[in-house]
Image 1 (tube, one colour):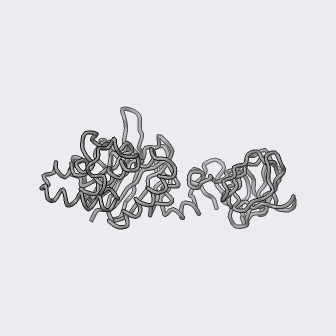
Image 2 (image 1 turned 120 degrees about the vertical axis):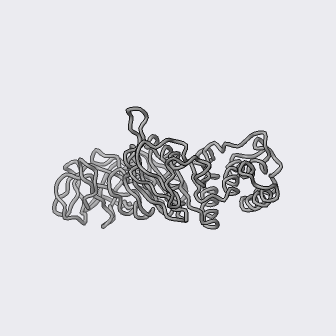
Image 3 (image 1 turned 135 degrees about the vertical axis):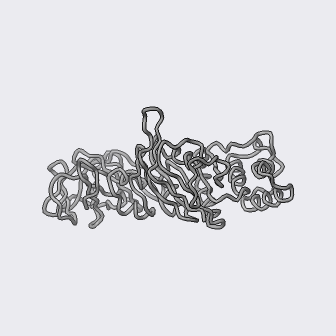
Length: 351
């Protein structure tokens, strides 16, 4: 078994606390993503699991064994870094097999495992090349192959796709997930890109300033965020989060514009509505938000529209094409049953 358990984990650099009592478990064979903005502590947390950072307080267990004081090489983990960390003077084959060589593997065993990993990753034709002769995507595959050759209990990925271009990131997302499904190895994947987390993981753990904000399946976090931070972080484009008041089943913006909502709340709230849940309306009327187009991004498959309405900037996402131009009037109709409400002060979900 290769479950990972983190209990009461804290990390401080001198008098500065960066991880504040984090608790979570990763089941055997599960793919979990750690997400959050830059500086939230996700890479520090991953390095603590790997044994590359000391633990100030708390416990880390891998496969039921407490590893707080266990050396990194003895934790039965393999890490894939953002910058590949390949030896430039070694061939692809030697890079992939080097850690196994250090652990006393025989030449025959190393060659067998390297050949198997190369076949999985489409690297068979590149085994005699040096890293400098490869593309960024190929170098990342070599780094993954080096981890696979070790046959660890846990894979740790530290933002491995951030140096790749957009198209290659999409391809590598699919490749890493397919590899996980094939190997079934427990995996923890750190990323600041919530699209990567949504598309790759079984479960997402959202961090903010060294604290765990919410953990759950991608759709759980998307459909029912526990607070305004998670609501604004999970989803692309981000959820609209607007100061409002609610009364008698209506949401009122800036004391002037109101739309119906399925709520029994009353008082000041933060109203959340996702861009794709705002429909284009042909004109002003009951239940419609009217404003002006401040920005327009057309990708061919969808239109992202930034509007100014009731003194707020509101983003809408349309899959259909509508007669919209920058500076023109626009009318939006929120879909019933798709509103989210958060406490105006704490940001906690209230409905």
